[in-house]
Length: 95
Image 1 (cartoon, rainbow, N blue to C red):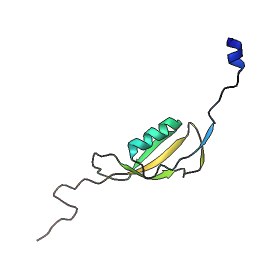
Image 2 (cartoon, helix red, strand yellow):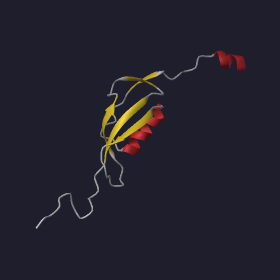
Image 3 (cartoon, rainbow, N blue to C red):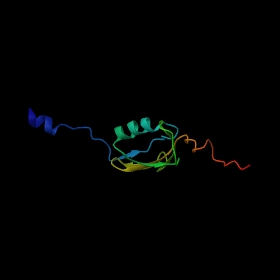
């Protein structure tokens, strides 16, 4: 019986997958989706002084519909709202 199970066809995951469009998703959701697909994620933070909130994915490389190895890397660009600069704004008031 063990031999029969070993010889039976097994469904294998494809080596390459179609890259999903993850633009517009929050960062945490993006990581969950890409983690299920087995992709590695490289994050590029676009905001210098971000607020401590979940960022929004605004760009990705490779683009959607590209074919990528299951263990490949997807680079995502994440935008966060910026913190106010000390003193209440970016402009210095001169009087």
